[in-house]
Length: 80
Length: 233
Image (cartoon, rainbow over all chains, first blue to last red; front, side, top):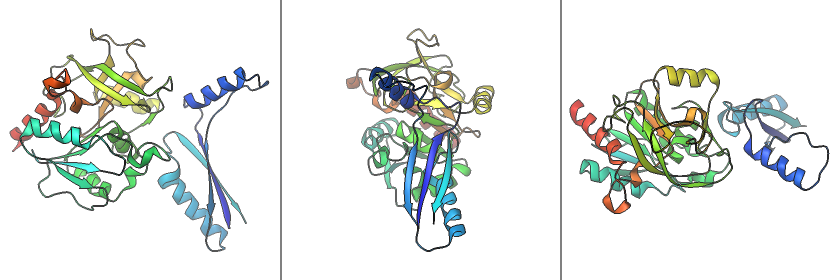
């Protein structure tokens, strides 16, 4: 079973890297970009076929390590 | 003073730290590998040194903060033991939950490696009693992610309870945007835990302790710790 955990910065947290990317896109002449926030994507292979169990394990992984919940939010997606 | 220095893969300031501790206390610190599950008996001070533990993978300090030895450090701190984290050590202490907040990328995205001035905000803690309140000291920094951030409530509590011990300042002690080298909230360079026994700071006092280093302003921190522990003994 495949899963994806996406970690993003909470609103209001300053993202200097996103700002730098935004500036670079502007200087490349890419039009219509209002703002950029950088995040992380984790593609995870789950052993076993129990979706509920997988979701619980991924939540545990995100809370314990993948995200720093002081500044980051996460979203879990299990792809059957 | 019996000190223990934690060693994680990718840490590179442990020998500088050992040298400063030896100079201040006359005792050889013990190096403690990250996979250990206990600290040496009779440890007075645990030091989490600087470097790039686990190559700064995931987030600075995130993986080291979950190493086996950190459970022992958490227990040691809960018993009131003194813990000092410098640079990557500060990041590790924040990631482990021993200190609040987080260290973000420097506001201008540059790795900063130069001397800074710090204002010592209080002198009545084990980590600052070697200085006078309001004293300005000069110590080096070397970090890319030292931009301290926390939610407004946490910052208010840190300030209200006098838990900011070191703040970036100009040579004359003035504080403002001109002295805030990395964009840290309120120019915070170092904070202590609620109980006051855990200090995390970005600058490297251990690199200004001998004449040959060009400055000895970092000595006060270590001398203060030795004095505190001798008085407590």
